[in-house]
Length: 346
Image (cartoon, rainbow, N blue to C red):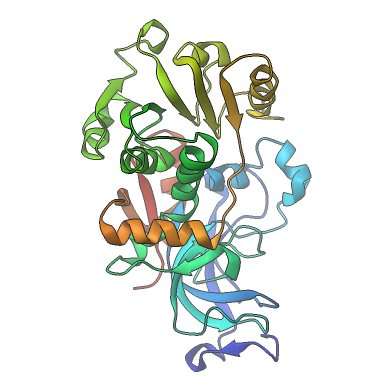
């Protein structure tokens, strides 16, 4: 039941259950099941969304597998996941609002993240906090909007806040064809940078279409042998050593580590991130890692850029809820270019 003080859109007031992608323990995508579960409740500053589309990203894989194990100590559940549902990025329609909500009302089309709530976006309904939502950009489909929040905010904060990108700078984006990378290339160009993207042979055309000035195929070019130096390097989900990445920088350049799959199953890329912080104290170069802060202001910035045509979400495919497990396998295997959208409601 909803809180007595929650405002609920009439067509949904009697709904009690929903379909959702769930799992009962940490592990591979083979454990994911589409089940009928209880409809979530909302309180305080939360809203209930009728999910029209959700975005699939690497963060969902980490939460699904519970790796690195350190994240389990951070509140996700030690032996088994606290939240059975998955999915963070979402686009949908508000159907109910908590008693403290003043910015949104039932019927609003919104996009954002469900991160930090008890119910994920791979479901017919999801819960989100208002400070992690914004109104959807005009003339944008739910599927396009759903893949923006996590990846595009990460790219924006990596370039603007931590990379301190400036017009005319030379920017190298390693992992340019992925979820974060496909947004980072476009954003770096919007900031006036000269952009070089690094990707596999099969994805060169995509990175060129995003506006990259130069594209490097890592299967035929060894980055360690390159003589070009960059003012800013974004290493997205990589595992290259800090010493090798530093050699790609100018004397006072900046390296931003965005995620990372290096390290063991216990700490993941934490060792490399801590190492970057320590080294940065003793060299003229800046080595930075960060955790994305989901917020409404950045979502509104991204929405304006989408409306202006400066930023275009790159959809690899659109899959139904029943296809999440297969899409997760493809994401893990590197068979995804750009983003996968999960279509939930037409």
